[in-house]
Length: 139
View 1 (cartoon, rainbow, N blue to C red):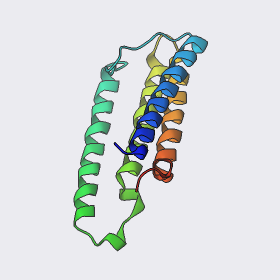
View 2: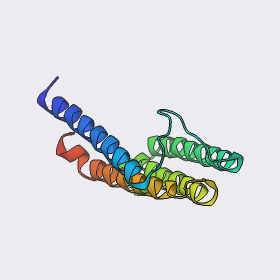
View 3: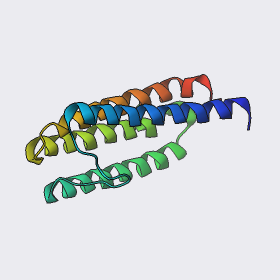
View 4: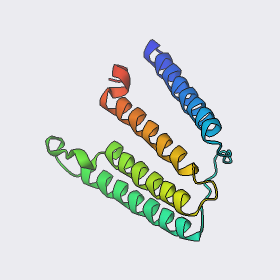
């Protein structure tokens, strides 16, 4: 592995540590209980339906965007059809719906503050990585 590959792995590890530390301290500060790892707990049945509708819609958008980008001239690339942009919008909408459902239906009403702050951190990191071409480490 070349030097850039090692640096990229170290940056990814650092990003994961930042996410875990942020989550840990915000949960302690807001007194919000931990969620299970690698599971997506829906607040109620309505949240489950809305969440799956959002996921299916964005999956179709990403597939359509990919098909469109494969079949066009590379000089005509439209920025809002980039996968990173679609994923950013997906994160914003999905986490906003989660925050609303937590605010409206969760017993611990501070959970929505954690969701909004985690979403903001995710967006900042994602945009930083994309706009800097992974901190100028990728070709």
